[in-house]
Length: 172
Image (cartoon, rainbow, N blue to C red):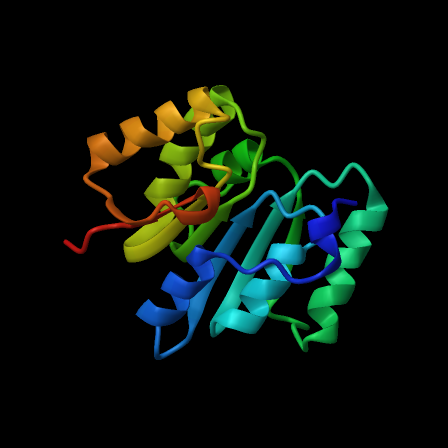
């Protein structure tokens, strides 16, 4: 486990989700969950109705830690752990329920971003918040894909602080 996995990991994404959603009832999605450090923070930071958590979880230990964290917060019946890749989840569930908030903590390469970002963005509701971790010059291919996405979609950039890109899907 990474050092950051031992405690909830809050982010600018959480701040913007909480500040744009005073009524609660969100449907959220996290792609790339690992041991659930950010999922725990999401449960603590914003009011949600449902949270889909997607990770291939090659190690049952990390999946168990994630489940234990969420259950300890009273999350029973308000989340689902999807043991698959982000690409597979998005293709299998294409056209289903829209998400109000989507957070990506995926491999830092351009190919993964190219495959995931457009499909995830299509599932984001109007006015929804989208976060992508590790948005920085250290990962130029991934950063270029995300920058091109912003230019092509007219996404509203809310933050690029702390190596994280936070976007809002414009309201139609």
